[in-house]
Amino acid sequence: MLRECCEIELHESKEYPPSREELIKKIRDKDALLCLLTDKIDAEVMDAAPNLKVISTYSVGFDHIDIPEATKRGIYVTHTPGVLTDAVAEFTVGLILAVTRRIVEADKIIRSGQWDKPWNPYFLTGPELKGKTIGLIGLGRIGVATAKRLSSFEVKILYYDLERRWDVETVLPNMQFADIDTVLSESDIVSIHVPLTKDTYHLINEEKLKKMKKTAYLINTARGPVVDTEALVKALREGWIAGAALDVFEQEPLPPTHPLTKFDNVVLAPHIASATIEARQRMAELAARNLIAVLKGEMPPALVNKEVLKIRPLEKVKMI
Image (cartoon, rainbow, N blue to C red; front, side, top):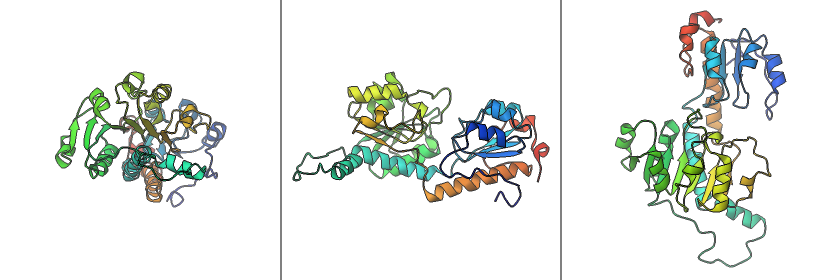
């Protein structure tokens, strides 16, 4: 899609993102950038790219981009919301089942030769979902999609968001709005679905974790820094909660020696909640369409910083 209307320079590695030095060197004469969430795009990078008109990120999250700085410079920032909703919601349910029904733990037991005893009634037991209370922190697209899937398990869903979602409650009568402390204290499983902002950084801290049931599980497919990692490790070590399943971390990649890797009641995944073939294709296409639209002087499908329209109107960035 990009080659049809642009000259492109591609970072060839499929495994490693460009180094910061490479990024700054290669961006100097570029009008547009299509980046990943692994690329930190800050003032230093923008200083190196005086011609930059649009930053299109191949992700729904955009906390790796300095949005105020880009807006100030008249640079359009776009992202890929919506297209990965189903993939992340499906994966969230998968993590819930994996940690509560101890699927990963069971797999390890067989592979390590520890399945050396006859069947017994208490071996690797975990809680059923039916009849349990699921707490959702955040009810955006992914939160709603997750709620729809979990509803088939005949659960009660408590949710916290900045605004009450009457539209969702009408469709899913098993849902109930509550404050965050109620969601944490009454839920058997708490799943996080908020973006990373200054207000959500370490939203789940030691104080919040202590409000959860000792039999409850924490699930995070949102952003790693929403959870205070040190507090979570302490909660797991001291038994404040029953376990956790995490796809995102404050430090990525997570070192194999990290304390989180030492718990049998924790399921870990390497930031792959959106990793379906279909979702990644849709993300790529939307990232390309966003970039092309801006260079054509057209409104992109998913603009992050709408204030930029006042600073540099679309007709001023039109090139193709």
